[in-house]
Image 1: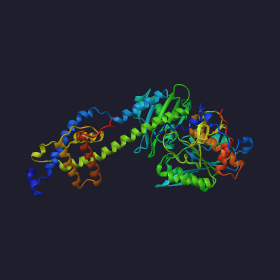
Image 2: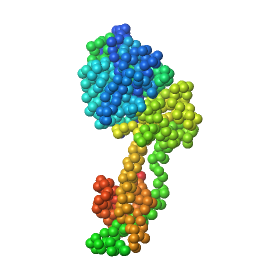
Image 3: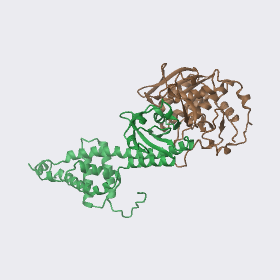
Image 4: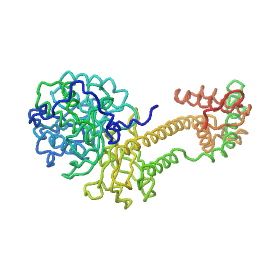
Length: 271
Length: 290
């Protein structure tokens, strides 16, 4: 780490947002026209996280599949886990945010955090691979791997996802050093802003983090049916995942770069 | 009955004599290093204590702590703390897969939560053990490219909730702590390897009978001091006689057959480094040392 703090949420801070202004090359598109009334119907969103509490009211009964990554020695496999829950609450928080924005979307949980694995990069990679193979439309990754050894694996996955029309929405990591796949150009990377509105998002023309979404003091679903106020890029990512699900619902054939372009063209103007 | 009888049976060059001299020299060296050693406090914990204290101060928070993952128990163990109940926090262990700290540890993702004291679902392991229940809590992983090794927690910001800037600042402190822990682990692992090698040498070379039995043994204390001295990068006065003895010991290391060859090589390198440190400063710059 030779530069200053990464501070990847800084471009979205209230006193810095002026710099996000730009001449939109495609023109600013009318949000209502682009999104229509689509609510995520017909779209599947996978949440690669700590699991999801299927009974939490915030999830609205839309969790249609529960899975976890299991290791056979060093080989990770995604297996069905029909009784899985969320021992942390974080995956449930993400699911609640996505459901709030795209109530018609079907949700899948792939647990990579918890008692029997450690959020290993290999587990995350296996979960993403599984989601691509099954044609999942949007994958929410509020976690990332810092392992240089997995750079190639995640790069391949990001490319495969891109060409398979699976949009990877990744929380930026504030910890110094690289994090994959959130730093790759083909994914949608997200950091937090503090405007208390789930439908306010900003586009940052100076990557690596391209989008800012609500992620400061967010009232989120938590474990055991509870709620909590939480802050972090990992709560910003599911806001963009929910919006992306709506866009895929409105434009079913849209590819990841088209979804990204629509998100950028309909982003809020910094004030 | 005498060592010279044994030496004679091996070819008349008294092979134990060199080693005995080396051991003697190491013993003397160890005693000389003792004074310098006493000036070197355990570095890692002092550094982590300083980091949590500074993090709490800079983030204007009531308390901060660092917990490291213990792979043997798969739990997070608090090794440094600042603020109320700091004394009770250090030494506590919590589940590495649950709670806010468990999430930050497992996911590598920083986060902060508010109003945890009002939520009965908040993991109270630490709160119950210390009697201190935080209202706001921030957790940042201690991580580098080799993985996540622990968590920095900051508790109870004095003015409102933690901000994204606070997460960035905490991440910088966590990064500093990670570097400190990694450095100490390299030292500790190195110490383990060097110690086991020296113990093997001591066993091989320990005179049991005759006049050599009164020579300074490479005992536990001497090994301790030697290991710490080798790793603490201490400056030692030049002493050509001892230099020769260390080279002799290095030579003997190379001949040991019941010690892992890699260990012998590593220990030999340390002895070499130690010897270089012993050389007079001469024309060689020592800048870069602290």
